[in-house]
Image (cartoon, rainbow, N blue to C red):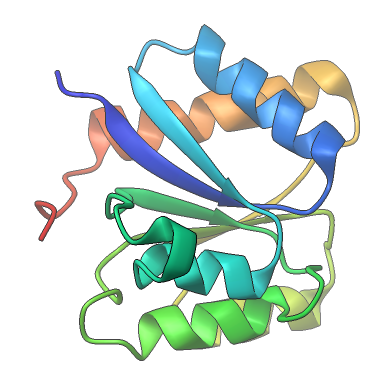
Length: 143
């Protein structure tokens, strides 16, 4: 099986590290790219500036609470772009607010996951995401 490309849009270095750790322990070979704010995520997805040679990710893990451009704005741009809208987007955030869940799904997020605060639970959630999205789900081929 070929390595999968994942774009993690996350500004918290601790959560980036934990996500990397969980994915490294997983069964799926992957390349994790990290964008620390919404503008950087969109540059990566649109292959602009320092990301001109970036690969198109198979999956986006998106935090809602981002500097410069929040997760809802990023989600809106992804899902309204003809070239990006087929990329599955998982909101992975500390929020458990019903408003955030409803808004995310109304904007066509593929999945909403609240980040657990405990280490083992966080690791398990990331591994479950990896297993589900890359073992069970059939994703569209990269463009």
